[in-house]
Amino acid sequence: MLAMILAAAMAVGQAAPARADDQAVTLEAETGWFWEWSDGSRARSRTISEDQHRTWSALPRLRVASSPGQPGRLVTLEVRHRGRWSVEDSGVTDRTGRAHVSLNPYCADGAWCNETSTYRLRVASQTATFTVRFSPAD
Image 1 (tube, one colour):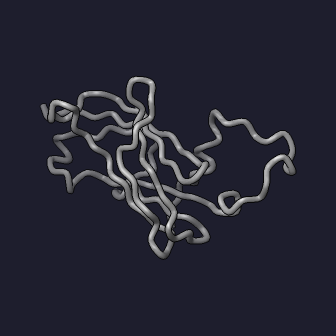
Image 2 (image 1 turned 90 degrees about the vertical axis):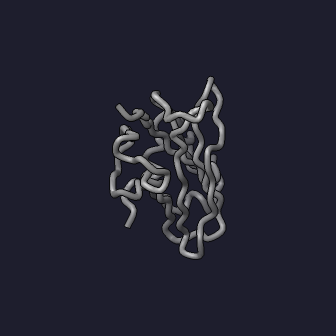
């Protein structure tokens, strides 16, 4: 079972509703969203190096799932660049409510990036933020 709760990760920077009846009960409120890295890590801040992940297929992906399973839901991976969020990858949950999205470690010049990027996963109105430090080969 995926262990990082998307809703818990979203709590930072979001105000709670003043009263429970101020917010309509929605499908998202009744669904638990979870995420983890495909290599088993649950880190919200990590370094991904070119030395360790030489090929695109070796990069860890992000696994997102819901409980109960919500098929057909759009999951987006966004990166913060120059003060704006841009979609880096997206996927739709399968019949069990699971989707995978991938990071892109390459900069505009085609070389492996040498920077720390802020990312967020988004499912409907729910988000979770994390950081990745990209490190080029020595």
